[in-house]
Amino acid sequence: MLKGVFFLRELGRGLPSLAIGFCLGLLILLGCFILSLSLGAADVSLNQVFLAIFAFDGSTEHLIVTTMRLPRSLIAILVGASLGVTGAIMQGLTRNNLADPGILALDSGAVLAVVSIAFLFRISPEDISIGFAFLGAALSVAIVYLLASLGRGGLNSLNLIIAGAVLSALFSSLTTAILILDRSTLEEIRFWLAGSVAGRDLNFVLPVLPFIVVGLLISFVLGKQIGVINLGEDIAKGWDKGHYW
Image (tube, rainbow, N blue to C red; front, side):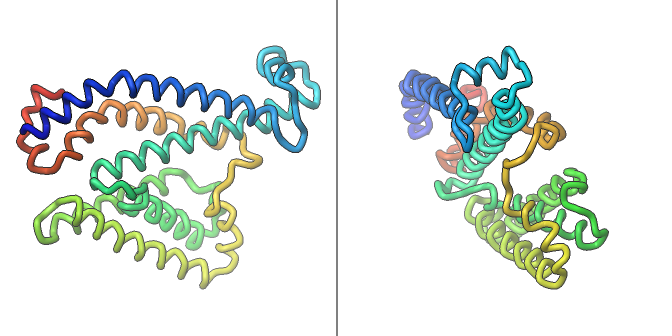
C-alpha cells in the first residue's frame, strides 16, 4: 500500500513534466509532418505546401502534396500512434519493457487469418475484409489468455508472455508453411506482409479509422489502471479503486 501511495505522489509531481513532454512531442510531430509534405524526390516549398492544403489550384506541386504525400503522412501517423499505444499497453499488462503488440500473438494471428483466407479462396489481401484480421487477432488473444490461465500460478504476466510467445511462434510457422507450399499466395501477399504507406490513399484507412480513434481514446482512459498494474498484482488487487479512479 505504501508503494502505491508513493507511486501516486510521484505521479502527481510528474504531471507538469508529462504535460510539457506531451506538448513538445506534438510540436516535433507537427514539424516532421510538415517536412514530410515538403521534402522528397520533388521538393516543394513550405509556402506551396500550405497553399496546396488551403488554396488548391491543381498544379503539379499541389497534386503531389494532396494526392501522394498528405495521405501517406496521415496514414503513417495513425499507424505509428496505434502501434506505439498498443506496445505501451502490452508493456503495462505484462510488466515487460520489451513487450510489443506481438507478445500476445496479435499480429501473427491476424496475419495467419488473412493468409489462410487468401490461400483457400484465392483472394487478394487488399480484397479481404478487415474483419478476418480482427477475428484472427481476437482468437489469438483469447487462446493466449486461456493457455495462461491454465498454467501454474494462474493468469499472470509471466504466463501471458510464455503463452503469447509460443502461440506467436506457432502461427508464424503455419503462415510460413502456407506461403512455402503456395507460391502464388506468396506473390500476392508479400507486399502486404512487408507493409508500406507508399502509394496509399485515405480510402485504405477509412474503414479502420473508427477502431483506431475509439481504441486510442479507451487506451488513454485506462492509462491510470495500467499504471496500477505495473505496481504488481498484489497491490493492484488490494488497491481501493474508489481512491484511485
